Amino acid sequence: MGVIHRLDRHVAELIAAGEVVERPASVVKEVVENAIDACATAITVEIKNGGMTFIRVTDNGSGIYREDLSEAFQSHATSKIQDESDLDGILTMGFRGEALASIAAVARVELLTRRAEELEGSRYVIEGSEERENQPAGCPKGTTIIIRDLFYNTPARLKFVKKDVSEANAVAGVLDKIAVSHPNIAFQLIKDGELKLNTPGNGDLLSAVYAVYGREFTKGLTEVHYQNGGFAVDGLVSKPEFSRPNRSMQNFFINKRFVKSRTAAAALEEAYKGALMVGRFPACILNLTVEPHTVDVNVHPAKIEVRFQNEKPIFDLVYFGVKNSLAGLNAPEIRLKNQ
Ligand code: ADP
Ligand code: MG
Image 1 (cartoon, rainbow, N blue to C red):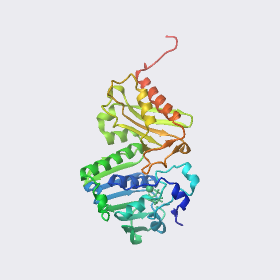
Image 2 (cartoon, rainbow, N blue to C red):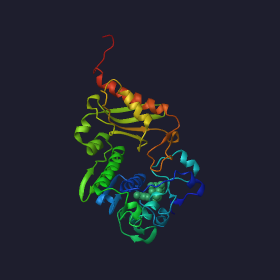
Image 3 (cartoon, rainbow, N blue to C red):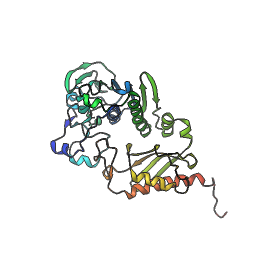
């Protein structure tokens, strides 16, 4: 009773193709997103040598049936969508069924997994797309995936990989964004044996942001909560006196997916107009909740760019959400009628 199946050619061709495995950070992003889709509440990422020799991601999510394991590593094999119509309303982080196949093509992969309802788990090994092992094994509920020797069989791609520190920083950057968009999940990053990130997973955004970006950054923030029609924006923005010298701390998420959105960025800055000096910029961690059919996430291989059915409601949502929140900072505490 497996749940993973290969998409038919037509649907596979509708999917924005492209290389998803560029460097350790892209591997970590894909594997952690799989853990999120599996409803994990705790996700631990361990890397060595910037992730080039070793990446281990452990989750306490759904696990994978043994009979699904070979299938999971085929390209366009997924449990998340069935047919073309599902592309109109993506609710999961993944849907293309490409990540595990692409990773296994260029690395040595070992997977340990157990479904909660099964007594016995499985150990699966695949190297350079060659299946080496698929057998019963005792293991905790959830999935552990170990990826060793990335690009060991594609020397040409090794040339594009940067020094270990840069790769490790990129991994940390990816995880920071995922952690602040999922405050209900406890994330850990262990780099060369050292704990680098540890979020509580208690559902509180401010606690997650504190764990990721520290006290100085967190104390300059104020909350945003705003709803309009089927759209909502929630998160944190910097108080005007805590502005920043660049835009690097502007983080937008659509349905918890990190995205680059010029519309959202323009609306944010418009909302601060007059409140900041030239050359100073707001910071934000804002999640926009939109109906899945109003946003196309299938336009970019890494899903960083998305296309909105209509940009206007997105602009208004961010603009009014932020504007209201900033206005609240200046408002007198109590206002009595007729005074
Ligand atoms: P996609 O995420 O687009 O479906 P992937 O290649 O990333 O494609 O994964 C293939 C399938 O393997 C997923 O659809 C899912 O069923 C299963 N899978 C992968 N990682 C996990 C995990 N950590 N926990 C449970 N299932 C997983
Ligand atoms: Mg995936």
